Length: 90
Picture (tube, one colour):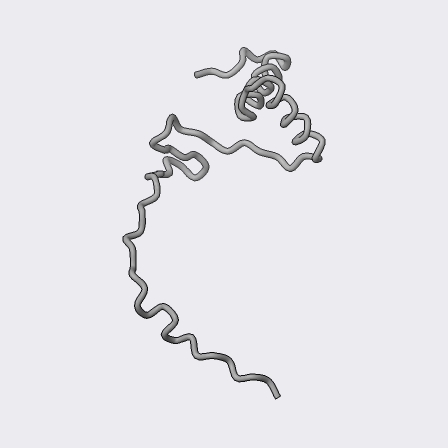
């Protein structure tokens, strides 16, 4: 026969409750973009790629000291220029 389960109804009695800390304010300006207090409006650009891309990006990050975001932005700028564009228009 199984042991009876303990009654946990009063397990949290006597604990002090703390005031929850508010998360940084983030508002959506559109369905896909986010405006935060940290900087300008951003949009997620992503893809599911083979693991070798993540490894190579991590290696470049370690070798150059640039953030992965900066490396991806640089790569996309180079791609757009190679396709006849003038890079990112601000």
